[in-house]
Every structure is written in structure tokens, then in C-alpha cells.
Length: 68
Picture 1 (cartoon, rainbow, N blue to C red):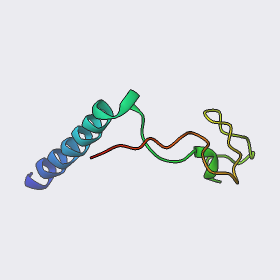
Picture 2 (picture 1 turned 135 degrees about the horizontal axis):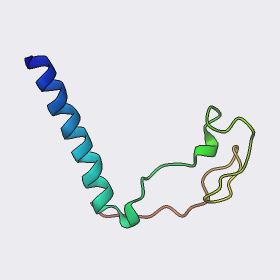
Picture 3 (picture 1 turned 135 degrees about the vertical axis):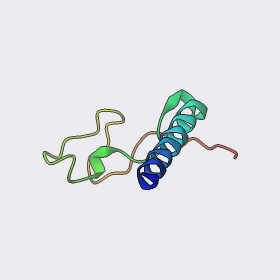
């Protein structure tokens, strides 16, 4: 029973951390690269629908500099 409660508590902490990150990020966006760079997600070789980058290019979205 202790293991189940500990697992639930750890999952709750993880979800809370993600939620806090989304709340404090500008426009609630996750940082990272385009999904088109991942060959498992883009098997057809299409360009990114967000920034237009091809699978062999870096994300064309400007990197936002934040002071933490």
C-alpha cells in the first residue's frame, strides 16, 4: 500500500511540475525542436506545420532568451 501511495504522490508532483512550467512559460509553449526532426514521428518527410522546417533542418522558430 505504501508503494502505491508513493507512486501516486510522485506522479502528482510530476504533473504539478509540468503544469507550473506551462503556466509560467510565455504562451504556455514547451521548448524544444520540431517534431519533424524525429524520424519516428515524421515518416513521410513532411515539413513542420509550425515553422516550415524540413526534417534535415533545425527549427526555424526563433529561440526565446529567458533570464532565470
